[in-house]
Length: 117
Image (cartoon, rainbow, N blue to C red; front, side, top):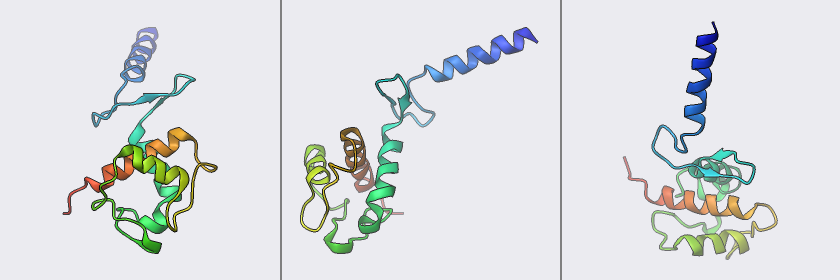
């Protein structure tokens, strides 16, 4: 019984300290030491705030929203647009934390790099 508890603890510790996920993406670390998958964090913010205009795949284009596959903005420019808004897009600096804005910007790059099936 004790051996199985110790073994389970060791396995849990190995997975918790791995620093990566099963799909090979790197995880970041928050101030409190909690691990977070940047792509998952970006997807969460994107789904909550961006889908109504950009769509799940980044191609919807409501209210002049850009298709991420056609965008040539780099990460810093995307962060600027999300933070301060542009055109009909609202600014999210009072809604999202800087790390959420960066994660969402990174996720839009991921969406833009997706291949059509």
